[in-house]
Image (cartoon, rainbow, N blue to C red):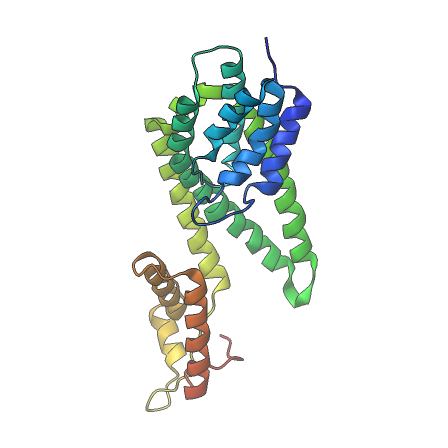
Length: 270
């Protein structure tokens, strides 16, 4: 019976960890990174050149998901490839079907958990440690992020290998939908808290009669301008499909014009 060695599994994991975006393009996304991660597996399991060629052909299909949680798919297909090499009724089409079926659900879970929740929390802590220009915030983020990703991705990869095809039902069934909805809700709450804590937009505009607009707004709805700015950016990106880069450039232009006409004062705090 053929068994993938721990050394080969570690090599496959490292290939995914460091190279999941290898040769990234809009046409292939993570395809080549995935292929590189599966190469050590195929090399060990199969003997002839024809067998290896057939196995690697499976991983030339389009693939794209959230890279950290997506390590689960790479580990699962390593387990499935091992089962296939031992004569079990699994073929390349079945493996590709599992890959395609898991891309979306794992992307939703990963984006909500990693991008929408974990990264904002770490950045929020890092920003808090960076007060007065301290480098501790940057050091904290770099060290903690890499440690969490190393051990987290490694755990997910080997868990996928252990579970094999048994994980599919859990990840795409009704239970998974509830998990994804819960994570999305948590991510939304975290983003709202980060926006309220770190976005501080004030105006220096003085109304006729001498009243300061900012103090008037504070009496009605504290941080109203900050909330409107966040909602405006969300609207641009989700409803108008404007890229985050273009939104940031637009905010720079708005800020520049606002300072010129006296609506904003860079040194104004309340």
